[in-house]
Image (cartoon, rainbow, N blue to C red; front, side, top):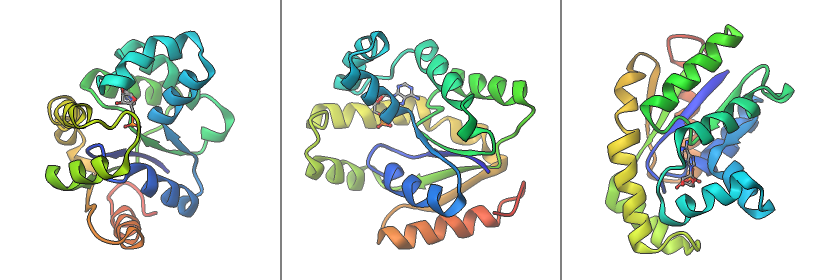
Length: 187
Ligand code: AMP
């Protein structure tokens, strides 16, 4: 299955993606993790991306798109993936359709983890990651609202929305139910 995961920062995308990738047998590909890895290894891409990660801004689309294109070409992604954190803008969604078109593949579902902004902000502030100062946390929510949330309408035909509040295992179960009920392919 080819699934993309969308939700505000703090909705638990990484946690759910880990559980779902195991259950569905596809790799979990997180652009946030790919960027953090580049930053840790001090690659040129990491050096370009660092400031954006520190402030909660998005890394420019051409940098992100190139990194994802390369990652999706690796053999482990041939039969499917769970893409976490990409696309985050309309141009990135176009880039993804071009990647899919080139390989003659389609997305099976877009999974939205939805949670009220006050809930995710409180979660992020209690997590204490170094890029999680209140200003950065609020900025990341604003970036989500303005640039990423509009993608939900773009994917309305394959959208599965799951409330991301409550115990982790319950959210995973809701997501698996929703995915198996989507139109394009039963999971
Ligand atoms: P995440 O772990 O998904 O919250 O991502 C952490 C940071 O990486 C974001 O705040 C952005 O700076 C950057 N990032 C991750 N995914 C993308 C993307 N698709 N486009 C641009 N920047 C991204």
